[in-house]
Length: 124
Image (cartoon, rainbow, N blue to C red; front, side, top):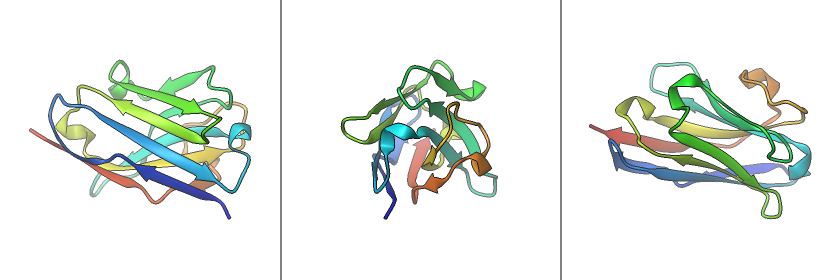
């Protein structure tokens, strides 16, 4: 049974930091690219960041470049999203997702497995 379990969300003031984790089980973690998406209230789910299977390449949406860092530990079957200099517009539910692809995409339909999400609220 495939499971992706996110953790690390919460309430933080603008300018603060959070580190999200996503623990995977039930499939060959190192065979999948991983991504983070987010969905703010009343908005569509949007791509945030992605990382290739071995961790050698990373991709970010423009609004988080220089502030967020995606990484993975294949020995621990875990992917991380370090979020610094948080802004109120980063407020959303954050989801991790797995894609059996060589190069991770930026569209939700390209991902095979999804977690339940962890909420992040950034106060001004």
